[in-house]
Image 1: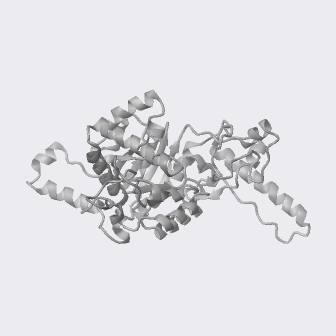
Image 2: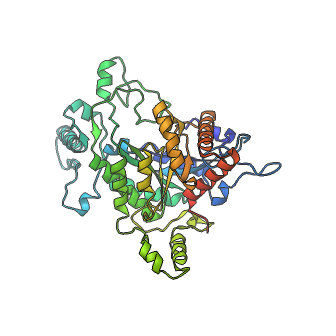
Image 3: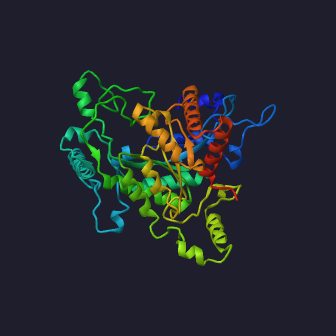
Length: 429
């Protein structure tokens, strides 16, 4: 939040600010209320003295861009790193499965309030432990570890609150959401044992109070990962919300490329586009195929003004547009996401922070960039602070993309700007 003031000096003209956990949701809404993009026209190149320029950033860039007022596209979602903090009362309410968490009953009418309160605390701890043993692998048996974890919240409550925020901010995304096989929970209790002199009111370790609570913040890691089935339940609920409202999504995937595709594609099962066979193409009347394709495109495109300017085909169980954030999968993985029968438009974003961290990932990036269609590439910083560092990270990736694709900087900036606009609002009619 401290870096928000730097929006006024950034060269980026538009950024997506994402909520990933409970502490972020209201913060992102607050930033959007002050700096949000109100309409599609806000993404057009800013005009100064002389011709229009493309400002370096998530939407547009040039090497000669000058500072201006950066606008924000808010994104509301629950990251897989924090998915254990929710219990699934959506899937269980529509099936025979039991919820992983049952709240402790209120001790009403008890004469010994202290004893009643103690009993309720014991029941709540038992309920917490049962939940975390059900959604974490390996199941935690350390009572001290469980005690430091938050009481889980119902997934349905988060989905309802997110829907309200999306309706309050018509130009918005759902994200960052997804699946992560690599992430392990921080171990507060182990950190406390390693640093017994450190105490605070919120955790048992010393922390930087300028940071939003909930992150790793240098703490040691536990062996516990969030079970994939639970991550999938949280992801699917958010994908269906995005489909209901016709909103695009930003999707995180780490060491889970196959299961991520299977999970996302399960949402559009039965809604796939019909891809004519060679025989069908031979038998179709001249011009009829083009008319059918135009009708399908019209179903996906958006209008150019008002609240509906961002909406895709609302009411479907899958989002109209999906961005695979800092895509780290292989070239072969692109093919499944680009199948012509997929009813959603898939974009791929790249960042120096994730995609250029090592020589091997950097080398793989060039192969992937060459294979991604020109109209599906997006650029991001994947940084948690705005300002010069973000501008520099964005420029680095813009230049990398343009070099690999053989584009001039102006040409590449214009292409990626158009892609960003289409991802946020849908294709223009």
